[in-house]
Length: 382
Image (tube, rainbow, N blue to C red; front, side, top):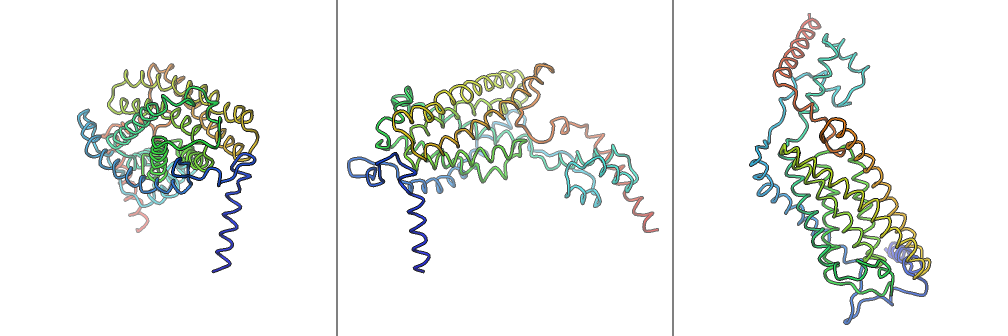
């Protein structure tokens, strides 16, 4: 037991080495909270865990009590496409790959004595069977819209009279001897709890094309929040949060309009979202945040190791911004060619057209596939 205790103490001393976290000639004792002033404490982040549970509970109630009735008002149904015809052979193939290669499709067509087109339709119908309803997607976007808009308004309100909101050099003046303000504390805790809840709920939410990019984004954001809190770089952290919240609710609003079949509104919101994305994440974020961490901190404070790691995490976030902006440009080019925004580049993995196959064609295909399968079974038994 003594060995483990000593190992834990050695690890704690190594991890919290002030030579890494703090500028030269500053120790943890220098920024310890007193009766007169309060500084950040790493243990404060534990409060975000029960808050994350509360966020998940509030989301559950909001989606069912508020968002679902709104979606039903716009005639959104909680219905699923017609299920694919039962077929053990194809079900086994579907478990291995929901989008089989052409070679697999050809082999299944020969095995079941049906055309390749019938196999492709069956797999498409089977994938649609697993897709969530439009109402569920609407309620999810409605919840995210509410959060991002509320977080952005709250962030602007508490930062409007803060000097570092207008002049980023104040993020480093008198650093790290910068007291923790109550409103900044709650801003951090709410944002931390939200991204914690997203990290878990993402595996249950509607799966998007950029699932793993979003997962990396959530983990990077949590690391940035944790790291900036531990090193008392919360002023820069608040700027990062406000910049990101300023654009996300436009995307969710565009999705909601799309689900409600308000195409003109969807196109307008998508244009606003794209412009806001470019301005906030490709102009303001590098010019205000990356620049102040890279140059202002170096000039005012000097070199310290945690700043370099913090800067690396910010650059990782910027790389994700560039990837998503490339996806947005693809959607915009397609929209210009087709005359309207057909879908968000971060939409579901299946195309909307798959959902709208005529029910008569699907039913006929399902019956024919089942019939061919039964005939094949009968011949085999004979």
